[in-house]
Image (tube, rainbow, N blue to C red; front, side, top):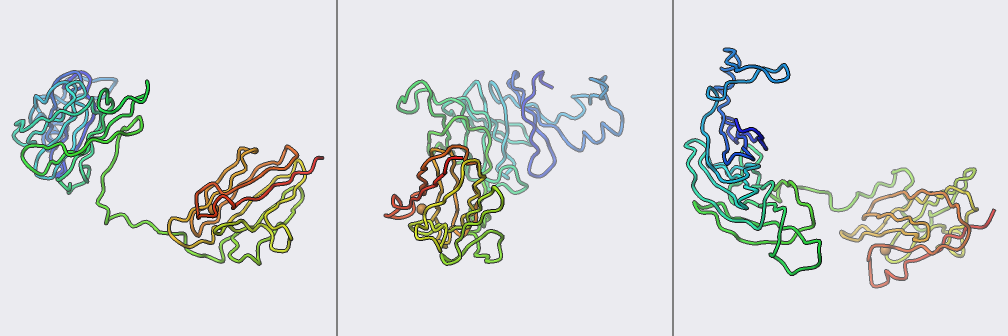
Length: 316
Ligand SMILES: [Cu+2]
């Protein structure tokens, strides 16, 4: 095989595995059945670091001339393979069984991986491929020495590939999976579990508890205020002593989708996010005395900016 192979991929039907040449402009298609037979028959050509090396000619199905710098291969479930070409800045489509090159499309530029929709599964979707490009060069407006990189969406449903869309991306896109959206069923909010340890679901139950030199705040975040202590006249203030460990247990009791709160104390360099229905914990040692404003750090309503309070740390 080629001297510096890069990327080994198994075809969806499990009959072949492919290895890109990287420094050789070829992809080799190997036959699994021939491979198992070669192992059975000790059909080897010497050893490398003590491991037997199978004879190339015995297991090779096809050697496909794809272009310069082949790296990784994806599949469409119709018997075709799509290999990224780093040096050519292109993707080559070929038939796995015949080894015949069908099409080649330029990309901007130097793709590493590509991701076909469900392309790593036994039943690829077959309609779309995204090229994850390592360089964008002149594709977008210049924003300084650090350029965005690029993702390109390609229609692979027909014989000829068709470029549909280019999008700038943060460096450095490496690999991705594309899954049909209806297969992903995330929870929308954290369920309201009143038995969850450290959670508080009603303003009346918010309280602050000292345990030795630890101060536990059992509070809530709700549009648009914090309640740390229901009994206190100034419920949005937490008083501790210098050197105390402060532990905020905050429950976001807003059970609407997309209403994330945050709790940030910038002068202590502390911040956490609290998703709808979630209880999250922020823990640190109050080693500096003073008055430290705290605030919600995720935009949550028109009154988001009023969602503030203070940590008061009295000196030792
Ligand atoms: Cu908020």
